[in-house]
Image 1 (cartoon, rainbow, N blue to C red):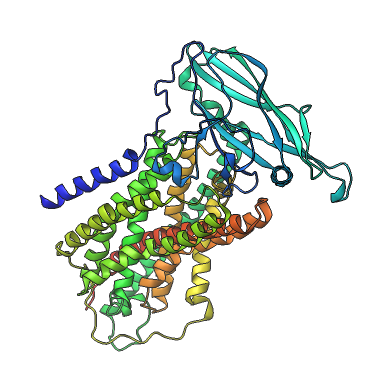
Image 2: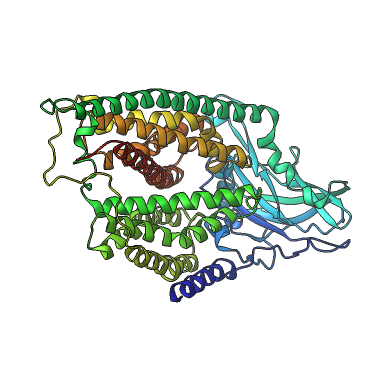
Length: 593
C-alpha cells in the first residue's frame, strides 16, 4: 500500500515538474480571433540550415528589436528541443492587410554587416511560430557570379511577405516569402542604412481548423515516399519469412534428429563418446560471470523496451503530430522516469534468481548503466553548446528540474522496483541440475568467436531496417517530417522477430559445438544491431548529409552513441530472453541425469 502511494506521489510530482514549469498552450488557447485582434507571433531561432543542432536565439543577429521583448514560458520538452521563443518584431493582426509596412530603419555597423554576411554564407534560416503554426525563411542569399570566392556577392533580404489563410475566426495556414528584389549588399565592410519592411495578405479558405496541420505531414505521405516505405516493409517481411522458414525447417529437423539420436543413445550401450548439446546439460544453466552486471543490463534493456513501446503507443494515437513543440522530449523524460521501477524489479529479481546477495550494489549499477553514459555525454555537449552560445545549451533552471525528476521520481521508483524484485522470491527454473565442476569447452574455429558471431547476428536485423533508418535520420538530424508511425511500428516488430530468431539459431549452433557459455554471447549477439546502426551513422554523416563544424559533429556522434547504446541494451535483452526460452524448451524435451 505504501509503495502504491509513493508511486502515485512520484508520478504527480513528475507531471507537475514537466507541465507545471510552463504551459504548453498558445496565448490564445482557443485559437479564435476577431478582426483586428493581435495574433501571437514568436521568433524562435536562427541557424545554419544543414546543422540542425546548431541554432541560436533570433536576436543574436542584429534584426529589428521591438521596445519590449518578452520571452514565452516554455515546457520542459520545448527547452530540451532548443526552442527559445520571444516576441517577434512583426505585427500580424487578424484579417488586417499591410503593404510595405516599415518595421524599422536601422544602421548596420561594420560588425553587424560581418555577422549577417557570416550567417548568409552558412545558409542561415529563421523559424517563427504564428498561432502555433511554424514558418521558416532564409535571411539572405549568396550570388556566385564568378568561380573565385572573392567574386561572390552576399545579400540580405530586407522585405518579408506573409500570406495568411483564415476560416471564419481562425488562422489556418501561413506562408512566408522573401522579396528577391529587396536586397541589401553585404559584400563590403562598411556601415549601411537599411529599411526593413514587411507586408501581409489575408485570404479566406474552406479548410477546417482541425486539418490545418495536415500539410506538414503530407510530405512523408506522398506516393513516391510511401512506395519506398512499403518496399522497405516488403524487403523486411521477405527477410523475416526466409529466416523463420530457414530456422523452422533446419532447427526443427535437426532437433528432431537430435531427440531421436539421444533417445536411441540412452537405450543402447552407455560406453560411447559423448558429443552434442545434450552432453553439456550439466553446464548449460551454470550462471554467467559478472552476474550483477548481466542482471543490470537486462534490467536497463527491459526498461528501454517498455519506454519504446509506450512511445509507439503515444505516436500511434496521434500525440506527436508535426510541430507539437517538445512533446516527444517531454514524453521521453516522463516515461523514462516512470518506467525506472521496471528496471529495478527486473534486474534485482533476476540477480536474486542467479543467487546474488549484494542486491543494493546491483540496483545502483542498474540505475547508472544507461543514465551514467548519457549524463557524461550531456555534460560534454552542453559545455560545447555554452561555448557556442547555442540554444541547445540548457538553462540552469532546466538542469535543476531534470535533477529533481531524477531525485524525486526516477530513484525512488528504481528502489521500490528493486525491493519488489528482491521480495518476489522467484526461483530460476532450470530443467537440468548444474554439475559442480564446469566442463571444458573444446577448441573452436575462429568464426565461432564472439566478434564474428556478433557480426553475423547484427547484419540481418540491420538489413531489415536500414531503408527506414534514412527517413528517421533525415527527420531527427534534418528538416524532413516523419509521421508514418504505423509503418515504423511494423518495422520495429520485424526487427524484434529477426533479432530473436537469429540469436536462437546462433545459440543452438554454439551449444551444438559444446560451448556452454551462451548467456553473455546471446546478449551481445542480440544487441549487435546497435553497433551496425552506429556504423550507419558514419555513412550518413559523410555521404548523405551536409552537416559540418565541431558542435554539430559532436552532437551527432555523441547523442547517436547514446541512442545506439540504448538500442544495444534493448535488443540484447530481447536476444537473451528468446535464447533462454529456447534453451529451456530443448532441455525439457530430453531426459537429464
